[in-house]
Image (tube, rainbow, N blue to C red; front, side, top):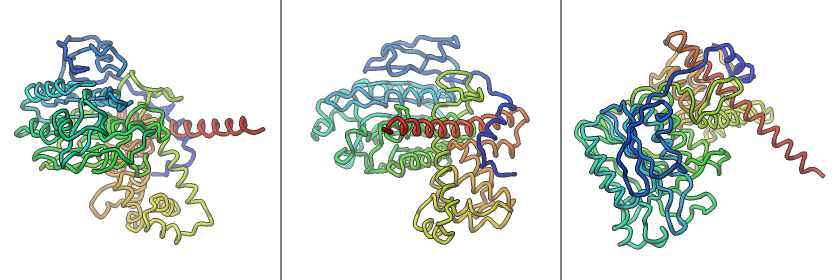
Length: 483
């Protein structure tokens, strides 16, 4: 298999010859409650109603909907608390909750979506969810909003806190905050798996993080998976805009939802691992998601989502629709690849210098050193040692390159993992070229392979075209600034 690096625009143009995607998105039912008040569910059966079932944050807060066709084995309770008083309001949680609800619905979950809930409303929702989801194979509890550690206990905050977060005293925290360990204990179930997803300890980028209270380390109960947006003692950012992505979503939820919507992401650990990698890279290490497993076997997420035929997507110049988060990932990896190739072609930097920088933890130097070595089927072990750390950390380009070297050598790595294993992770991380490689080496039908290749080419084209447009705009701005 030849390399697919050079001239990504040419490869992207090949997608014009491939088949497009179609079909209706698969959805499960969703219940919505907001502002501490639940309303009776009203069934909606039309495709238009189905598409509108998850409201945007600025939708009528009284909307409530239940959609038919749920899987009785998969349930989710999704909280999005944005409207905090006393100057502590957040931009993204309500949007993040709606995004997560859509992703879980696409995987067949019955979703209860609760926005801007007060203390009584959160308690009510948790009790109702525990009852209606009894006997489920997988339960998901998602929370986006403020949360922090206090007296060795992690608390999630409803919107009716009586004072600014920085000024809450011991009694107020204990009486108005919800202890996370108690919520998890209430939702433990025999035989099923509980997946807790906490996108909390958020701060607005303009406010800074120095004095912000954070969540502490939390052990997962038996039979559960607990995922935090960031490591214990760190903060989770509230918006991707501070990292150059024009989206009012938190990095963690934005990319986790993307991976949940990817058909190649089958198990929860794959979704969390892929999310860790792209969030860590996108934020340059400022935010590192953290996951705790206490399960004998990681469950599958749910049925793979069908390709969507509309909704909140942008069409690229090839006419193939891409989700906004996949477009953001495509641009990020295009820029990252450009930086790596620039370093690899820098004649002033020797191979020994790259190896030394790689040994000191410079992932770009490690990749640049590998890119200098031709793909000729030689023993990949030395190159895999350079790629191991960034690939394990979720760097999509390192994962793809590990797959490339294994494929060329017809080999497996030291852990017995194949080229397809690494391409699958890289594709889930948003790298279109890895998706095309996986499709070309896949075992699916010709139609499935054609669709997957077209999608991968479209993402490659998107990354290239976005980077080109950004460069042109920067040049125009510089020209305007000249006297």
